[in-house]
Image 1 (cartoon, one colour):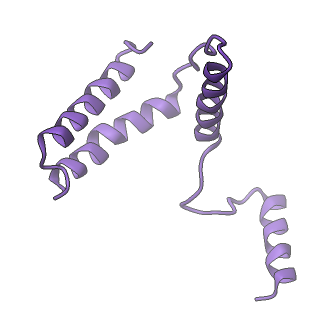
Image 2 (spheres, helix red, strand yellow; image 1 turned 120 degrees about the vertical axis):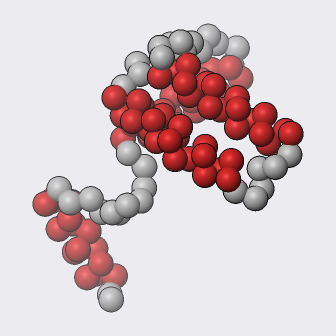
Length: 106
């Protein structure tokens, strides 16, 4: 497919509101979280206070639920997570995710 044709398709998808990368890419919330962390890293390097935490959203809750129900169990059952350190990491991740969902986040 020519570059011109690909560009026309992308423009058409944008105009129609279709997702240009079905099943992939990052959501606007993921970008918001990314840039928040990025800005705080710069602030720390500059000796400034961190920005206040972002509000916990329904999208965050759904992501955390998926992490607890799907991601962490899949990792626990995977072959590369059988050391004490890796199991400790998964336990920590699970605990922190549960705390966030229960409103115990910083």
